[in-house]
Length: 128
Length: 391
Image 1 (cartoon, rainbow over the protein chains, first blue to last red):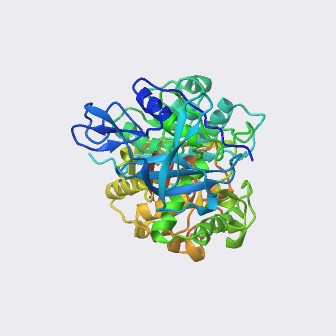
Image 2: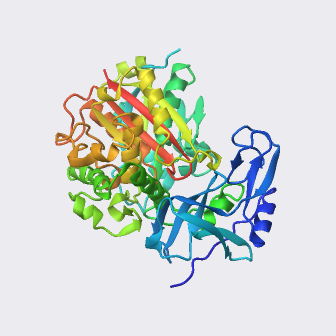
Image 3: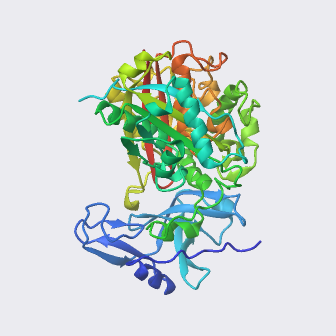
């Protein structure tokens, strides 16, 4: 079966550090220096306290599956999920490199980076 | 100032088509407008307020649509919240009428995704590159079906909801659809039929998903003096509420509830009624899970007990406690333009008037509800609740 193609959409001003770090195998999360809370997807303003005093922090790259769906209608089928990182923030992702029917809610996972169609790398997760 | 009862829905019309390759999108809107105005006994010249969703009307907002129909407007609103837009428009029209901004409000919806071959539920939708979430979500293949499937999976995990319980929602809808000559799927189905249908986005099967159809609908809403001069049954808007829900920055992600929790509470408070007062409910049914979650959020049962609530035919008219979607809903009848809020309001109006199909008409339709969820339960959406009273 063919591999899923990960299509790079493009950056918007301010998101380049996320994608540059991903190329080096690092998962970066935006965090607020005022309220201390992380958020995802990354923004230029904190959705928790509206501060613009933000910083990028490297995540450990481990977490657990909050929920998932096996996209049987996909060509090829794939597993879409939300993973809650150990840092306490959840992100949409794909669960990869493991049998689809072995994915479970609550399962411990770790980040892996998949090649995108244009040379960028995409953070995905697999069994830890 | 309470807006309760300051407007009436006097026209409600659903286009009978489910596939319209030979009718243009703008003509579909116009035919719906004509149908609703004739239903009300009003003329297009009476319309001074127009409400549509920017996403299903070609051109800039409703500007081109207003010109196509020859409208001369005092009030104009093209708020788009996806499939719940039309529930929202009832509330916005109520506000505009109560504050004297317009006297006769027209709301239209139309769409032709079936003729255009749109893979509504299974193809990830590419948005605008300026949409900040897109680069962080689109590469993972978020399609409408798998976004709702993730909400279903979490609901199952947290509350023990089962595929069989979800299937009861479709079974109830099919019992109603058999009486609707326009329904796309008029055949009565069983729980086994649903859970044995092909898996689209696990745990949602094909029969857990709504249909893809062309069509549309329209509403005419006006002030009490005009409503009382017409020959139609009086259907008064007594409660409206809206709310948005999001991932909240990923910190408080909770896919087990919808914006209906807030929009419903606001509508019930304004109307001064309780869920137990509702005799009929139109509940947005993009997927079976959507219904289960919204019933909980609107207060028809406790959070987590929606699966149990919908089981054993509890949503079937004449059988269960809460008759829902007596036209067959999006699951069986139609989902015009991938937007189901309009037909939710229309069937609620039919019920309140006593004009639903005799086999599904509820006995005492004194207070009815129409609720919509537009967007995605899995990411971000807007809920809107409308409560109507037969006067």
